[in-house]
Length: 513
Image (cartoon, rainbow, N blue to C red; front, side, top):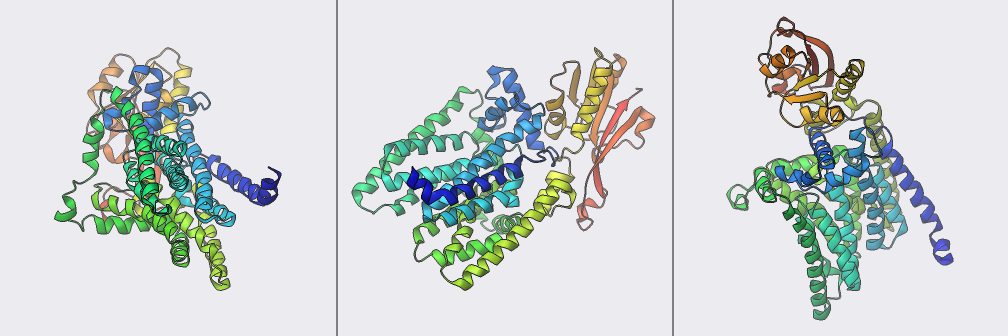
């Protein structure tokens, strides 16, 4: 132990500093971003599953694996804000990923310097920072992927059964998290590169991986206890093209989606990481060709496959590919050439500048953060953004406390998602407050709300400004209590010209029918 401490004390100290920075960056101001549609759904599912044990497989009803929601449940005991409770799962997964990146980089290149640089890049990259603070399953999937890589590689090198079993548990966790997990299974044969290619050893490795898969699918089959297990495959078809798409129309949407994936990395990576990664691959391809090939495969193949077959493609879908480009970027610092080394340091500082500027804006002025167009629209501008929901919930709770025992009915646009789930996660502890979905577009006061008002209930309506088509709401008894503006839409996007410069969440009280 003394020898380890003597040889590793600098790396240990620096590693602890990087880990502390990772923790601080992800914990600080955790609710700076408004709640997103999928976050509202997942947190609401977790609340329902917590309240009713017979519904522990509720996410299967929409074809979603439930592990992420299961993990949210314990955090409700420690955090009164359900959004923080949900996002804490991703924060913890992000910390697990940061440690995993360090371990994997050292495992591949046997360099403490490379491991520390890789962990530091992971900690401050806006891409990982952004999604490690969202109550979405992608950060958890990314963490499992890293540790699958670590233990699968260790299994290939040592041919140990215990490591193969741990690999199986990690794969099982990924399968219980999100549907892209089979990518990790498809990559397992690639670790044969790290054997001596003898028939005896390769055969044993295959047997060990079969053990891993046996454990993984035994875990996955737990989902058959739920009544809607078949919905996973059914809903997957809504998001991916069939295999025949490869030879019927291979360029669409592959070309725009593949380009978009690298656009996301250029914006949120940010772009210097691609320069470092390309340099790392070129510099190390001769000496560390196995490591470079497998890192490139884990980075490129999932992106290319999703670009080819995905019907819907967003930045978070490629999050689990990012750790490998980060390790490639760090590997450039193995270069012996002083010119390459100093250029690498300069590029790394440029990376840090853009990263910290991006993160600073996410803390202090989210609207000004240079998010890619597709991500800015979804998280900040449109109906999927939950700007104002917490404030509306606080107002309703305060009203309820001032008038205890009085029944309150809140009508919202839609039937699930940002509204009404975003409100329900805050109001679920108050049985006198009922949240009712009333449809997407409102052209007149819904009958549910007029009936509620006639019954003597305090009645509210929460709706996005683009969804209400009543010319003068006040004339029909809808009195505007508050309006919560979302981020500005860009003027150069033509389809937004008729919608106005920005969406507003409107909070009405119905005072007459």
